[in-house]
Amino acid sequence: MKSIYGVTIKQLEQYFIDKKEGKFKATQVFEWLYKKKVTSFKDMKNVSHKTIDDLTKDYEIKPLKIITKKIGDDVAKYLFALDDNNKIEAVLMHHDYGESLCISTQVGCNMGCHFCESGRLKKIRNLTSDEMVRQILAVENDLKIRISHLVLMGIGEPFDNYDNVISFIDIINNPKGIDLGSRHITISTSGIVPKIKQFTEYDKQVNLAISLHAPNNKIRNSIMEINKAYPIEQLIEAVKQYVIKTKRRVTFEYIMLKDVNDSKENALELSNLLKGINCYVNLIPYNETSHIEYKKSNKEKIMQFYDVLKKNGINVTVRREFGSNVNAACGQLRSNYEEA
Ligand code: SAH
Ligand code: SF4
Image 1: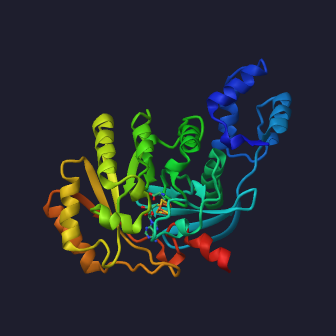
Image 2: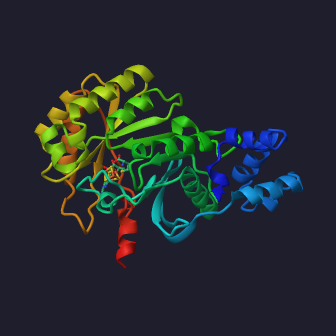
Image 3: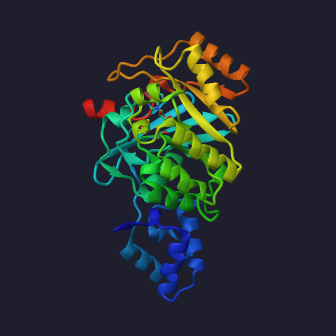
């Protein structure tokens, strides 16, 4: 049966129109689901018995099952079981500007980045839009908080599951529902160029982050398989077009891997590559994992890299290290769990 959490308000309006009922019912149902957060159709108090019966017949209303959680000072990490018992994870980060949730978009990932735990476990399937919505609700209900920011940086490649991701954003962005503002949502991609082009035409103001991680094809080919399909020149050209057409700033993520991509020369080459693009670079201290041999760059190396970019006029920040004590990097909780 279809989950009610995967239905957009337009689809729900159509559902009621088809039943010869007022489409305002869609708004009522959305408010019960996402403002009052009931988990049973029967609890929708101002909705008629007939409607409750119809909804019960046609839709499932089922929260995600939390298998384990690890709560740190400013981070909470969740492992969920989907209805078919596949496992995914989400990480909540507490910032002074709000609560930011990082969610998964696929079970596993086929992009095969060499440093990534999620890629080590191949893609089993895409997440449906309701499975993305339910990650938000599960964390909000568990911690009794309201999530203000969302990043699609958990397990999976969002642009390898484009349609479900877009319909998910439609659901959570609706003011009658969770009401997460577009500008507070960030999609991160390893660089699927045709999808970046498609996303350029998307009408919502959702942020785009590119996992660049290297200043040239030689290094990028050695750590990211996707670069062999869409090399850096094509990627940067697509991003430039995105920035021009949307007038939005783009983020480049750059994991600092010891002796792989962290030299002064690499920083200079990166500065030249990005010169003139409305962007900022987020330097990410690599989160080491027991299965993969890459090491993180030391602090001095990261600061030196930072200085070179700064001197060359590139906006740059170093990402605060969240929850390495709770295995917060992409895919780590799940992979540790499967082993145990
Ligand atoms: N597939 C998308 C989104 C999920 S990965 C993408 O690749 O952009 C989200 C981010 O986490 C990416 O920038 C990825 O390179 C990074 N990442 C993966 N493993 C990591 C690790 N062990 N430490 C730090 N960042 C990691
Ligand atoms: Fe997939 Fe992103 Fe991990 Fe690469 S970094 S394997 S694209 S999840």
